[in-house]
Length: 239
Ligand SMILES: Nc1ncnc2c1ncn2[C@@H]1O[C@H](COP(=O)(O)OP(=O)(O)OP(=O)(O)O)[C@@H](O)[C@H]1O
Ligand SMILES: [Mg+2]
Image (spheres, protein in one colour):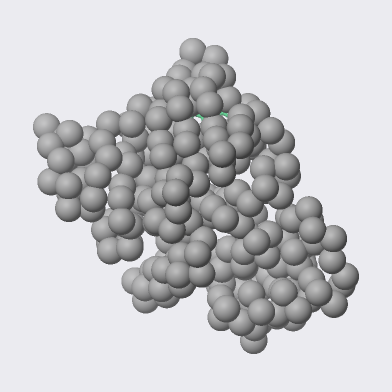
């Protein structure tokens, strides 16, 4: 089943076409990798799909419903959630408080404090942050802060989770931990699109990879196909 269909998605910033007629489909249960050089348009594509910025043209269908141009909170409540390249958690709030916000405001389901708190505790257990529940988010390591953002996203009970450079700035052991978490989330039935420059993670956990360059989709395939694709090698290494 297709979770997301993107057709001809385009964004112009003045004279710059940051995303240029991108077509994309995402299948239920997959981990799709989105790669490309700096400035390729990866984050802009996430911004367009998640409603953070308005598309110039195109079509976005999520679970069979047109979500083109809807507000981010409306899209989130339909089950499509994203994290940010530069972590956007509330530093002065505790880990628990950050995550319960997702449980309260990220779904249209009405719930009591007790229900939201129970759900938050379960998610903190799941991502391995339960022992840090009462710590202000500002005091955490980068990995833990990123996991708080992922936990908050999970608290919205998404069908599709879009991760923007979750592994950036992590050491090799932390990258391993983040890879394990992403796979665990997928195993819960949540479909994932991940933007990543950490090739080890992309090659090991993504079933399929899409490559953007100058706003255009230039390649798509399995990790093996992408790693031997002539165009992709040219983009990354030069001719
Ligand atoms: N709000 C904006 N206004 C004007 N230009 C923008 C805006 N957002 C992004 N751009 C431009 O659009 C292009 C694509 O940027 P984007 O952030 O999507 O790239 P990216 O692939 O995510 O890169 P990186 O790997 O460095 O995160 C860049 O040239 C960027 O400067
Ligand atoms: Mg980016």
